[in-house]
Length: 240
Image (cartoon, rainbow, N blue to C red; front, side, top):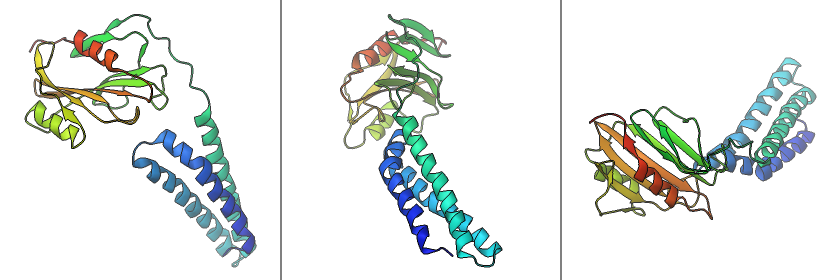
């Protein structure tokens, strides 16, 4: 289906995907999904190019030239797309929404707390996320820290059971008493290499809902003070 010179666009695409596509995968995915994201781009590019080659190859009487041209055009577009995405990911952060220079009280429905100075209150990314704060960026992939509150139906009967599951083998569930505005909870310290994974977590069960308060930090930053401030100023807006 392909002439021998179809090898050149294939080599160029594979090289660009290996060099630039991996960085884009790291910027747009996290953990084990990075490899899947990168491999999907690599395999997907060749699949689409092969399809684009097969159609003119069959339509024009098994013409290798037509098939190779279609293959080359699609791989060229895919190569440019990978390069463009890499350039976009390398650009400086978008203009950051000004953050308050002092703590500001905010309400998030059933609860509220003071947003620490310098932190941005940004829109949640999914339905279970009720509060979302970022530090020094409005892009979570480039932020120096993040604090988010997830609320949902608990999968375990107690907050401590959930904490132990979250901690796994490497995390630590604190044993000392802890409460969030009078409601008993459990705290977990987690091992996290960067801002993609939580470093601290507080879990509270209230009115049949599980409240998970997460904090994550990038390398070289410490969000523990901001996390403690959120827990200290937390208040419930609805009577129990």
